[in-house]
Length: 233
Ligand SMILES: [Mg+2]
Image (cartoon, rainbow, N blue to C red; front, top):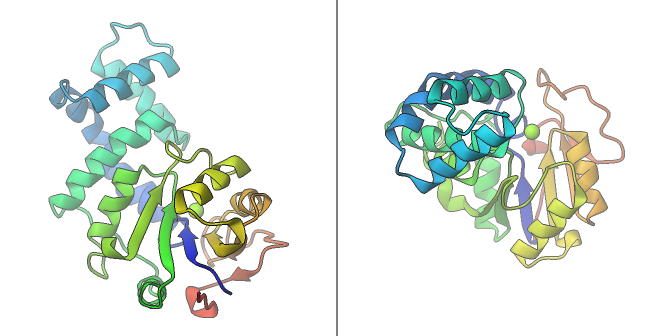
């Protein structure tokens, strides 16, 4: 394939879904309340808490415990709601910085990312995890610090929902690229459909044992590992 940009999903594509659902969620869960209480003067946290009160139908005076109950409910339902992602991202960022967390990529990932990067293909991420969380997760991996490989990061806040074509048009504008010069890799067919509707090239990543490992990826070309694909300028 030929492209100027490779845009990558993370969960299920670069990392096992369990990495997020078990390791990261479990890490964030007990730390949400203490984080809110300790950062009452951080405008980002204040704005997130106000949004949680609104979305959770809580009274303005609702305390941290009620806010955290809403957050835990969203986590249990795997609802990726922006203020939850924001707080998780902050907590994970500190967890990586403190050395509590290390991202484990599938073994074919880091060699291919390095190969693409060194060949001049530029790399970007589009994940429902916040940009802060993305950068943190790449900073400390089983393959070292991979943050220098990535030129751009997109999430549902700065791009939009992952299953809607306008989000991919927003990203293309942010990359200063046309759709045909971008390849998107994801494990979720609906995300690939949205990217293709925006004119992008798409590749399905069907990893055995992952939630979408046996999904129908038609009409998208599909790989089981990154060893099976070449992208050059
Ligand atoms: Mg995914």
